[in-house]
Image (cartoon, rainbow over all chains, first blue to last red; front, side):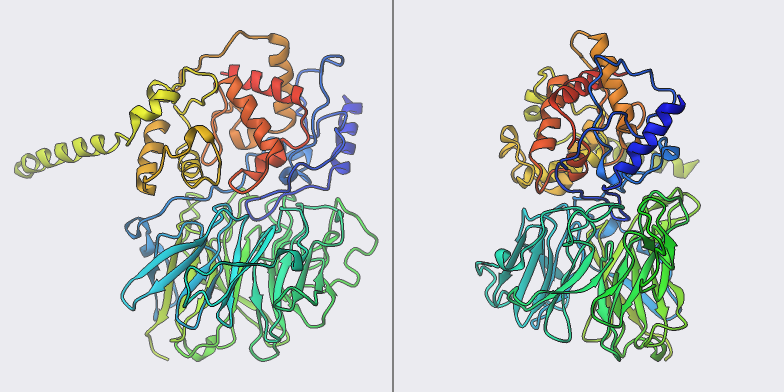
Length: 435
Length: 188
């Protein structure tokens, strides 16, 4: 028995090249890993293997890699998404709590799986999805919103509209729809070759933004929960010229960023990042980071959160040279969209304050996140104070949730749109209280 | 007392219409392959009885839109709205599964059992393999169907396929799949 356990441990360590995530995982295709001799984390009660007849068990699924034998009986699993339309009447918005003077209302529904949004000059809003593979266009006639699918069957597409052209990037494809607001049926320009997208799927769904420098920023996540990177194309943020040329890696050691924005004063890039899984309920926490210099290293895989050395991918002085976060954002909370508020509708204290949507945990026995928080720090990220802004998407007493707040979009009137990936809806946050 | 008299008929009417609303569209068409009450009589086609509702809803959307490409399902769901698919999913999730496994091979069953444990299939599909939420019931599903669909997951990853499963099955050889399918079809 002792020998078996040791072997299992060795196999587990040998396999820490896999995947798990604060996001529901979408791991890469068939890893070509050698079959180990003994199943990792095999329960002690399992019958003795029949040496001759027993085929060698396969490696553990990638999203479970890094999971210790002590958690073999865990039933923590990715949270179910919802592919079907949720009517407004089934959205319990009255459960949400905001600070006094703020109001939240349903702005649009009927777009299952909606994630990051981008608004064109005409007011049309474009948004991507993950497993559903759709890109939506939402039109507003001032009274009500309607939507259509611009393109579908893509592998986890994200979008951004820039100078009238819609950029769509999926795990394995980059498309541009020129002048789409005026020409809804325009055929896309295929730019896939120019972007040289790496092949792994896991954590490689995209988030797209154009920076103040006019370049296209896009993250490439670590293709695993925790691993030594298979190649150097991952765990980084890059920027490109709009046509896919001039690629630069601007940040490394970034496990899985799902959102970023530029500070309104310094124009520096701030970004969210998800911590690794299977190290227990309380850590390592997600991160809110600030890039103060091109090329900074943010610690993955050996250093997490505010300086926690990884127990699996060990390195001497694991956190040496690592840019630590502005603030940790909660264990497994899945911090997503980040938006610095620059509008005039909200009270002055919110100006330049960071809004962060925390989509909520799966790799944790009690729900964490499922809310919107503000982080108030100075322009250099000092003295960060995190405050709940919207709560009520989860019911802590019952350990259940109904919505997953995901991304923001600031409207010209200063109101803030918030997408709910779970219910396929967009909510509008406005302020009408005293200023 | 008086108001109960007024309310009861209204309540009865509501319940009746709710029961009627649960009758899914195209039920006969479903039954042609998936069997009475979703208990398939043909080992090539999956049983739907007792599958988790969210799993059914999400798969029906993917199949309707061709994201998950199943030749036998082509066109079958055309024109159905999400609300129709939800009614379908609810109906089948509420039916009682009546497994009809083939002859048992104790050795293969045992091998499959050990494999499934080692792979921690029960984390998501639950230790009794009855499934939950977006993760299907495996216990008592047809062996031939399980075998075929696991091979698809393993060999044809892509949009609309659950990449978690693609990854979970990535390292398996064909004998692993045979044993797993045999075990799961017989597990009670």
